[in-house]
Image (cartoon, rainbow, N blue to C red):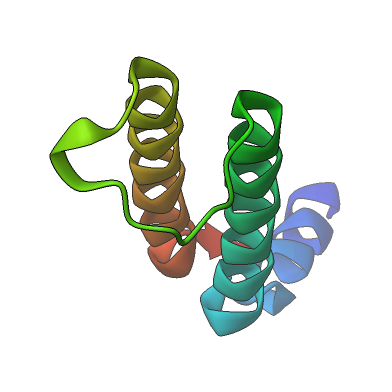
Length: 80
């Protein structure tokens, strides 16, 4: 009888996609972190430096790209 009860509980749980809400929260977190990174380096995020960007800014940009890639994974990740 216990097995039937457990089976009923598991069958009632549906799969939900994390979707746009989680993706938006993740994007906001990435933007906050890259803004803090730029500020710590003494620059303003969004100002284009082009080829003359210092190593600290390139590191911030790289971290931002990694964060963005992780956000893309949350868009498709299933949650319960």
